Image (cartoon, rainbow, N blue to C red; front, side, top):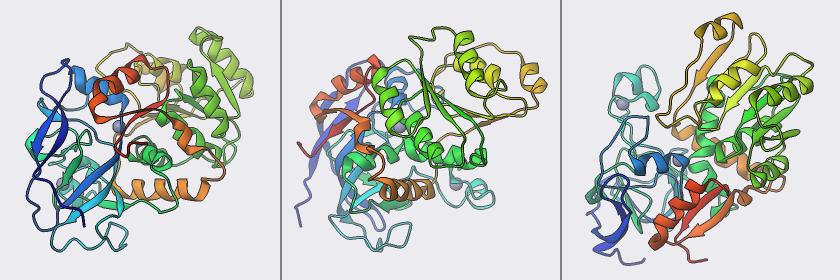
Length: 370
Ligand SMILES: [Zn+2]
Ligand SMILES: [Zn+2]
């Protein structure tokens, strides 16, 4: 067993919109039920940009914090009494795991509503004070005793699995709310970043008739095709919403798609989605985490007799099912190709800048040195 160090390196954001600084922080003493993990890979999220700038629209923790809420790590130490993962698999030092956000599993929403995402005491890894060592931009991370963890299947590489740590499980949670995709429904996915790519691959494995993906980044659209998209619409070619709508109507018997999934993270996508959807359609919002606004006429929703769903985050079952999905389909789709850039912990600022430019797909901090 490797020795647990007294301190480790962590990339700390001290103030919004300031560069991240790498420094030594203390590794906490492990309490019963807790897990100390050694990070292997942490994804940089689109929402990390908003978090770093102070423009996140979803509840707010103030810096300083160690960012990073989508990671794979190996167990460095297990607190007394922590013997299995959320699926009942035995845990030992060295196992690779992922973990859900922090819910209490005791409040009204956790217990009566059976929805830990709505927990009254919910807090998130990646948004805590550096002394808690509770973010993925660090060599080690401390997981509180209440944290649900899940083992990463041995067959999967870190690169294949990492997308489930945020984009994949977030999509699956929304997919459940949407009630899935019904037989021969047409689906439009707005945005082919990580969330849009998982929407694409799950939709292509569903009963959908056509899966149509819209984005402006060629690399993303190319991967969307490999992940099962039947049609891709390049926004450089179809420059305005009217042109995109016309193309989509042409592909959907003139009626528009029954399902639109917003994975664009841009407020303006909302009106475009409402406008193209078929009467009685279902719209799922997943990507708009920023504070930017848009104006719309509620009557447009009413007139179409349509339903708007929104979903944020997920519970541990979505991590589990996401990992099973990737394991069962890993020979069919190049899951690892979503990772388009790797950075070291010392390059955390560069990793965020790469994400900000929006040209690749998913940058990660890779702790394995490969
Ligand atoms: Zn994320
Ligand atoms: Zn709760």
